[in-house]
Image 1 (cartoon, rainbow, N blue to C red):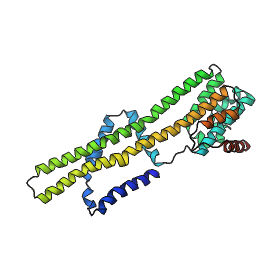
Image 2 (tube, rainbow, N blue to C red):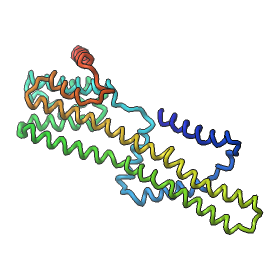
Image 3 (tube, one colour):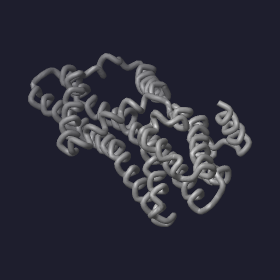
Image 4 (cartoon, one colour):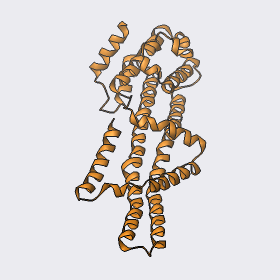
Length: 286
């Protein structure tokens, strides 16, 4: 929603300001220059990226028009799930969760938290490290190192679409100049025309530079920053799981382990101790 609002503000400010000067908006409508700019940018995008990067970018683009799913409620569900799992381990032993981690979709523990269960990446992260804990062959230091490496891999992989979009945005002003130069070339070959007509051709040519810069900094470039912010939010989920499980491995009680996880959240989404405690009690009563 905010992306659409932002685009409307950009269009209103730029074109509204231009129209307010008494200029004619119709002169800015140059579809052929848009074809040149977008066509060249799209071609360069395919040339400069692997199929994996192109696929990841296309998959990530629709998410910029959706709100963040990493809300306070989502984090409270995650920490309630971790509390339930660790409480079961404390009461019944590590082997008691073997069925839960092998088939989380059929697990009565995981099924209480559909928002978390719908995110297969975080579910896989949780179950993989619970499985390592069940095996009993790794200490907390080894698991922490492995978690750090996996989170770093997740972050680098998730940053790929943002990097591709950023490069695409960086190239748009240059392709705008290319379109403008082509317009100038056309103007120069028509130098015998009356001055009024030459002026129109030059105006059309300059629109290319305008469009390239506007598209880069008003439309495409901001998407890169938004994707980076969404990536940081998704990484915070993994860090919460990491801190909570490591606290449990080091011998802390489930309630205290979850408190460790709560502390790593951003202040804007972090629930208070009382809010989390109340949410856990309600989840236990279901």
